[in-house]
Length: 65
Image 1 (cartoon, helix red, strand yellow):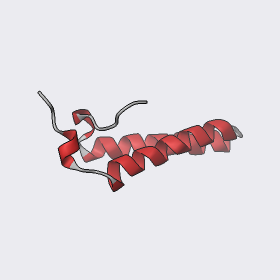
Image 2 (cartoon, rainbow, N blue to C red):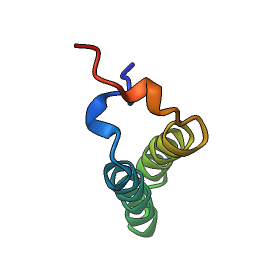
Image 3 (cartoon, helix red, strand yellow):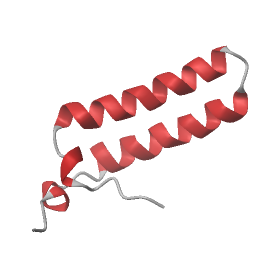
Image 4 (spheres, rainbow, N blue to C red):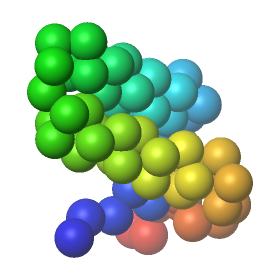
């Protein structure tokens, strides 16, 4: 799949923005009557929330260079 543990995602505002945009898109799709796309973006938002806030470890986001 893809990794969200990249140094680009270390700042809190970027993690909040990505999670919020995904959740907002899920709500928009749900309001438009598209339950499949709402579920897809809802799962993406949930995955982001778990990775960014529950399993967050600053050591995972260090640049490896």
